[in-house]
Every structure is written in C-alpha cells, then in structure tokens.
Length: 337
Image (cartoon, rainbow, N blue to C red; front, side, top):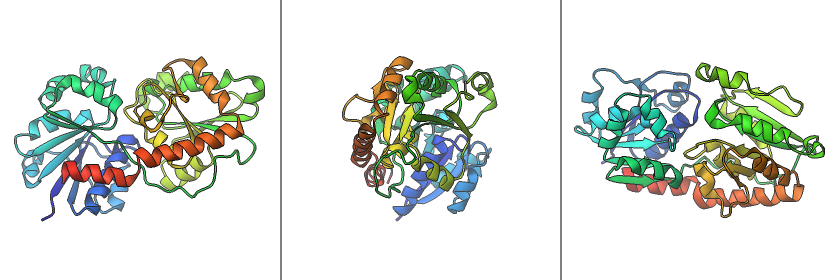
C-alpha cells in the first residue's frame, strides 16, 4: 500500500528551498507515494508544482485535521517549525531544515520558534555543516541527506568558449549571500587577469534587502548584472556558458548553485561556511569566509585554462560521488517510506 505524504512549504518563491521541495516531491511520487503539497503562502513558484500536477493548497484552519489523513508530513525550512511541532500529536512530522548558522538569528526574530525547534523530535538536514547547528536543539533524530540536482550534463570540458573566463555568483541579493565580497575580489584581480574575465551576478532583489543591493557595485567594467532568471531552461542555458561558480556566502546550509555547477562540470569556489563543500576532496578552492583577498587568489588560479579543465573534471566527479539523484532516492526512501 502506498504511503500518503504531505509536503509543507513556507512559501512559493523562486528560491532554493521550494526548488528542493519540488525535487523531493517528484522523487517521492516516482517511488509510489501519494504526495500532496501545502504552503503557508502562495507565490509564483506554485506554477512549477502545478505543472507537475501537484497544485499547492494553502494552509488554513482546517489544516491540522487534514494532516491526520497522511502517514508522514514533511515541513520545509525552520519557518514551518511551529506547524511541525504542533503536528507531531497527529502524524509523524519531520522538519526538513534548509538553514544552518543563521538558525539562531532567525529564531531570535520569530517569537516561539526556539521552543518549537526544541520540541521537534525528527529532522532532516542537507549537510554535515548544517548538522552542527541543528544538534544544538537536541532533536532525537537528525538525518543528514545531501541535496541533489538533476543530471543534465552533455559532456564536454570546462573551456572558455569565447576566450573569456566567466565567473558566476547566483542567488538572492542579500548580505548573507555576500555578493559584495565577490565583486570586490573580482575587482582585486591583477589588471591583466581582469581583462580576460567577467563576473556575472544573477538573482532577485528583495525589498527587505534593499539597503544591501543598492550599495552593491554592479556597474564596474567586467561585472555583468542579469537580474533574476526564473525560467529553468533559460537558467540552464546561461549556466552552461559559465566557467566558475562562486559561492561566497557567510552561511549556506548546502547551495544548489554549487551542485548545479559541479553537475555541469564547472569549477566551483566556496567559502568555509558553505555546506556543499562536502563535494570537494581537498580545500584548494575553499576560501576563508569573508576573506576577499583569499577569494581573489582562488579566482586568479582559475584564470588558467588548464586549471579550469582540471577543476571542472574534479567537480563533476564530486557531484557523482555525493549529489546525484540515485543516492538521494535511496536515502529518502529509507527515511520516509
């Protein structure tokens, strides 16, 4: 008999957490589960679920009673912690944590969240880095399940197709994502290297981070601003033209962008506070968080065509070793089904 699974999102935006939840929904359904999707708020990403015949329902007053129809309910991100905590009396409830070091700050700004987190008995997190911060809330069970991205690699090598080395920082423009450090590091490259490179910035500009992105230096020569790319095919075509994926974040529980770069056979640079560093066997392209000079050195190293080829192959291997769909399907089936 197939299990009935409820997936609960805090919102429906074109950001990492809802994208990961859609991946989970498709994996569960392919394994025979009956999947319903719920969301605390509506949003544009709901169309992506609807296109897969899983139109999200909005959480309302009847939601607690509805949960009793399911075998398990998975609550996505700590913004659903209160719902997860209260649901435990009616259904097996699992909190899927997408945050890491920033949990304490988020909880401090949301009344009652810390208490709810401490009551939740079972959690899933996306990296060993994130696990360090989750264990402080003493859940009985924490499963570490590395994220995955669909493998759409076409083969080929990581080569500057137009003679220019293309660096990419992709993500919502906010302080935590540290686009300012990436821009300053790029501008710190020796002039000769900077002339043979471009830094591409892609991502949405949320109003709550307006003060941050208004002060970003996006008009410098060599820095290219693309805005938010919502269409998946357009985004993938854009990513294929990049050579180096840079994740300079102050805190990132995983980073789907890093996984996508590795899957495509691109070089990847991450800060020490990015959970997806588990793909890397050595620390050659892991830089000290917040250290722009260290990031500049890593970027300069990857202005070498030979190094681009070598690191692209290594990251592709890292993706296959840690983050492909087969591994994820096996872990999720074991935990949830």
